[in-house]
Picture (cartoon, rainbow, N blue to C red):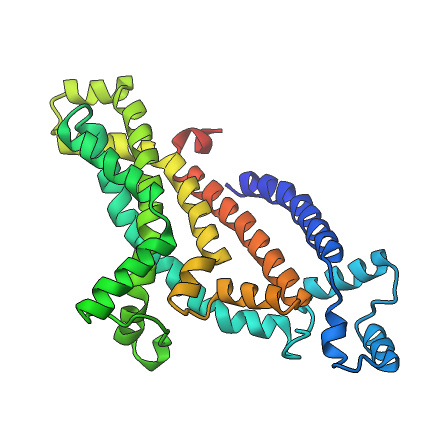
Length: 314
């Protein structure tokens, strides 16, 4: 397994380098000068010169990039131009919130999507299959922001079951924290569940027609054993990759959902940074998000190795 993962890591390293170049270049192409905001209304030329010297903006572009990527490799993503806090510190404050939201959303997605996909594949061509496909198509079609607003109106305003917005840290009360996250995680989870359901159904249909499944049925094994032990395990391989990518998207920040429910996660942080032209924060979040996606792919590759005996044989 180690050589298998080492090959994947060697492929990932130049990818991370290209991403860092792209992130840095795109930041330089953005219009406006954030130092004009820091210099105040008078925009004193001496103050602007000092700020440019402080943030090394007078250096050539390539030196700025080398300094930035060198500091990033040491965990230093720069200083926020807006709050004068280290970007790493800001991200570490928001990361637990986003991870909690992502985990709860993935739980909803897996619990709903995979069983629905299995049931739809097993009951292919029946009313159950058609109903599951209609629900999945609805989940893909309904915008998250609309579903979030409707849930707030019904669950919070009319029924008064859950808080409409805000966030309570786990350290201040696990149950209250979960209550504040239930609606936003359900909103995100239903959309992901629809995607997982469609892919699970497609993967299961291809596996259920395989020779080894027919052989297992011919041996007289119970249908439940055939589906769960023989078919599902082989059908899970593409689902693992999809789940890893979907989780990466959640960690990257569900911007609209976090804005609707006023959740102080990555999504809200990057929106505020863009509006305030806090480029150091934007760069840091995009770079960390991209690296997170790559590591999620590495995790998916490792799970491939565990789930697929043919890879272990090679």
